[in-house]
Length: 458
Ligand SMILES: *Cc1c(COP(=O)(O)O)cnc(C)c1O
Image (cartoon, protein in one colour):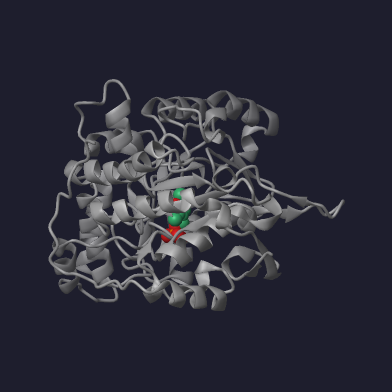
């Protein structure tokens, strides 16, 4: 198997402990069969999320020591601002403590109650922030993007015809902006093509609607463009990024992903009026414009991370590592979402555990088994997260898919760790009939998956 070996060596190590099955059995019961309630120290391989879990480089750690903690005008802010302008090309750069604050500022200045915001698929914080301003978040990804098994190089693309019809239907005056999420996190980390960005921009321009990119995984998306889109093979990822953002009027960014930092984000805009209003709000809720919600040292680490993430040896390894895990599972006949996206592998839990009905949370049952048997933490994206009660009939409406996401932190785990994860899942697949379903014993009224408590059935 062709897999690019790690383009780094390890200078600092953080021990991880393998607990016994007995310990894990006790801990998962105490946690109410919810892996959000587990102490992280009891986990061997943590694939809960790729957000804020990256390993920083020696260069970034060195940058922390150069933090200038002046309240106003920190040198790290200027370095950060210049870096963002160079990579993304936008005029106004507003630092925030993470992505959702950038979203909150943007929608606070741009969205009025009753407005619509189209996107390929809104990430959950993006949708929640649109709705918080009284807006309506609309997902218009291409049909292929909703089918877990159809192969398509750019399953994150927005359906431009649907977008046009939508704008005509509601009227362009009700659409203050449109978004594209790169890569499309809620659709499995699937990329958006340059052609799709270009066509989207062309359409929006006719109506005078600005295009804002949700840029969380921009480098991973641009690497896919280089790999898959004709005409981009010889361009650098930095050149591809510059072209992509050149079609946009701004971006929101969670630097906890492709900023390679543990905390940080920003809003970048060309529109002077929006930037001014967002900055006023920033001062009210985050901090002075030259630090946002961050320390000077965080800004320095973020500036350095944004450049490192464009390193193509790094990206080849990064995308390759996720794909490698996916291929090991595919070769063993494990049902996973295809093609493998940029930051995670998704297991189809309905197909993995056909004996567990949806009412007994097959995704969560798989998550529990992966922890109890092997010390691996994954996350359910299925009924525990999304099932809801029909207010009229009282019947439960289940999501179409029961997925388990294995999100890979950046530069954290080695190839041998990936082998361990694959072998564990393959081992569990062989004796999957032993996995039991779950029922809820406690749930909160909103976002129940974070705090729910469950018990095993039978
Ligand atoms: C993580 C994420 C966000 C929100 O960022 P936070 O830093 O978690 O607030 C927004 N959009 C996408 C696509 C994301 O993956």
